[in-house]
Each structure stands twice: as C-alpha cells, then as structure tokens.
Amino acid sequence: MKKIFKLKTSLIAVSAVMGVCAIAGSAHAQSSVTIYGVVDAGLVYVNNQKTPSGGNGSVTSFNTGGVTPSIFGFKGTEDLGGGLKANFNLEGHFFAGTGQGGQWGGLFGRQSNVGLSNSYGTITLGKQYSPAVLAFAATDPRGLKETFSGLISWALTQSPLNVGTAVAPANSNAPIDVFVANALALSTKIADVNLSGSYSFGENAGSNAANRVISLGAVYTGPVTLSASYQSDNGQRAGLVGGTGVQTRKYSLGAGYTIGDATLTLNYLNNKNSDPATGAELAQYRVYGAGLNYRTSVANTATLAYYYSNNKDGSSDISKTLILSDDYALSKRTTLYGLLAGVKASSGYTTGAAFGVANNNLYLATSGKTTTAVEVGIKHTF
Image (tube, rainbow, N blue to C red; front, side, top):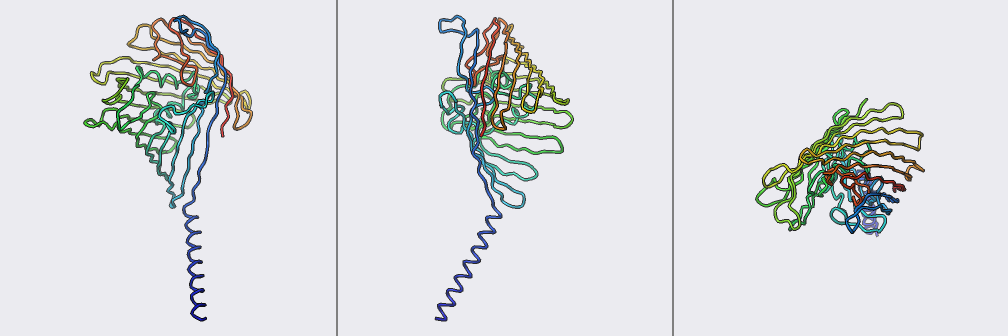
C-alpha cells in the first residue's frame, strides 16, 4: 500500500509539473487568427463603349469593386517571446456579382506569405503587395481605389501587359505590378519614415535577372505626407505561352497636406517600358494626379480628383480624367458611395494611358471620345 501511495503521489507531482509547464508555454506563445474580407458591389453606367459591331454605345452593368476589390483572407500572429512574433497572411479575390474567384493566381492569388517581426521591423516570405505600390497609394488623390484612381495607371501603364503562362516551375508575378510573387521583403520604421523593399526571384535557369522584380517604397508621415517608390520588372522569362512580356522601370513621387477637414494631394508616376530582348523603349507613360478630399461630416467625405496621362513615345496618346465622388459611412464597416467621372481621350489614346471603371477594367475610354461614368454602390468589411 505504501508503494502504491508513493507511486500515486509521484504521478500527481509529475502531472502538476506538466500542467505548470503547459500554462507557462501557452502564456509564452500566444497566437491568434483573424478571418477578414470585403464585399463591394454596385451599379455603373458608361457611355462610348465599343459594341460587338465595332461602333460605340452605352452600357449599364453590375460592378464588383467601386472602392475596393471583394476579397477574403486569413491572417494570424504568434508571440514567440522577447518581442519576436511570427505572422502569416492568406488572401484571395472574388467577384461579388458571380462569386467567381481565382484572380491573379488561384485561391490565395493576392497574398500567401509568412514572416517574423519585432520592434526593428518585419521580414516576409511569399506573395504579397508590392512595397512600391503601397508607398504610391499614400499620396494618390483617390487613395488607390479600385476604379478611377492611380491604381489603374500603375497597372495599365505597363503596356503591353506581361501576359502569358509560364512553364513549370511557374512564377506568378501579376501582370499589373501590384503583387510580387516568390518574394523576400523587409520593412522598418526610422523616426517618421516607413521604409520597405522586396526582391522577387525570377526563377529562370541560366539568368537570375530574367523575370526578377525589385520593389522599393518610402513614406514620411509628419506635418506633410511624402512618398517615393521605385519598381523594376524584368519581364516574363523564357518559355512563355501567349505573351512576350515587357521590361518596366517605374517610379513615383507624391505629397499630401491636411488643413482641418481638407486634405490636398499631388502625385507623379513615370513608367518606362522596354523590349526585354533588345532594350528598345516601347513607351514611357507620365501620369500627374491632384486631388482634394474634404470631410463634410464625421461620416461623409467628398473627393475631387484630376489625372493627366501621356505617352512620350506615342502620338496623341493622352487621357484627361476628372472625378467627383462621395463616401458615406453608415457604420465603421459599411459605406455607401457614388461617383461621377469623365475621361477625354485623344485620337492616339491607348489602354496604357487608361482610367478604368470596373474591377476588371472591362470598361475603358475610347480614343477620340469623351467617356462618362456614373457609379453607385455599397462596401461592407468584416
């Protein structure tokens, strides 16, 4: 009996020690996972659109992203102790009108990354937002909204687009330069300046430079907001089906200043496109943006923005865009929005100087015409 009692006592002691260790371990390595997303849907009317017969006409359509794309995602963090954390982010894209998904590379075509962070900064591995486009967004007159903003010029001034399907192993760098795949990224903050950069591996045998993407961004936040970005994309690698690719070198500069309820913004984007084989310049787009955001109330913000885009290497490849929009917050999660826009396109206009209205740029301006758009919608975040 004494032996049995001693054995039971020993087991209880071991269990108690293990319990204390488990409690200590859970306190040391706390983790959390967040499910998040946006559903953005509305209606849009656009005139001077090309018809199947080759003429022009108007169209009224369902729009799946007036302010932001419709997305879903998972993100999480684990406290590793000593100020060190592990992070991950998985993010996909879908069209609210049909439920169709898979844009930009599959289920998690927008983001699929993991990394570590501490008080000094963050290191991230995987597919993620380009550091350059995030810096560019900081001073865009419309904050890089999904329609009629600097986002369209950032994406479509890469012309011709890097389209095509890579042979295995695939490197799915998005043709619009908004996301970078197979990337190593670093970010840090020094005083009031956020610095970030990424290196996207081209994964092309025989040439480390082919399809490589380098992206850099810097944002100063103080009495004024200043932004600068640079991104080089060496075009698609050899072995593509359906596209030849283009080499791009783009940079941007911007500034913003807030006076009471009003915020003034200025932005400049320069994107030079070259033939990756010969180095010959194909196009060089220069886009100037200016905007005024005014909070008419705690819940309401009105925006007036103007964009001018021209191609140095094109004949009359110019677009001029004026946008008046309004966003009304019904709550912290739900926003009603409306927009009125006009695009005057010169006779030599190409999609490289474009400002689109739909989430997938289905409706673009027509050369030699003035295209107008009216849009209303609702955005809900969760």
